[in-house]
Length: 153
Picture 1: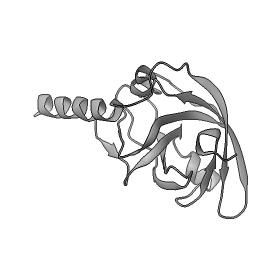
Picture 2: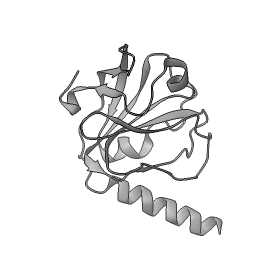
Picture 3: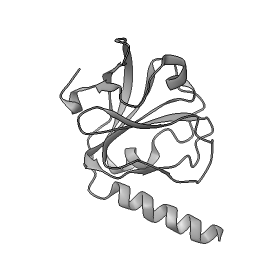
Picture 4: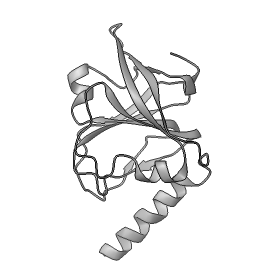
């Protein structure tokens, strides 16, 4: 059973990475959450785009400092699956549509879990924040994310 789950998870991860942009170095980019109540929450994100970056993410990290996170750009909207393999801290995973609208939030994901965390449909990007950030900051489904990859700020 465990072997079947590992193989299935690896197949899902490979499918997620298929077609991802290749070998563009990660950088720090500004991201702004536009909340329904009119607040603008500024963050600085590590931008992940290469296959290796998309596969590794926040694995092994023991903290995510305030007002920071990781932005996974998958290049175009498609169904995405994430997991918490080798990630020892809880995260909030924010699934974002092509237009920058938040479609779903997986809050306080379980550290080190191999459970698959799917998007609710096609998404262009996923943001990972420290677990509990969305609740604390009031970031909700339907809010907008401003970033260059969405053509907004």
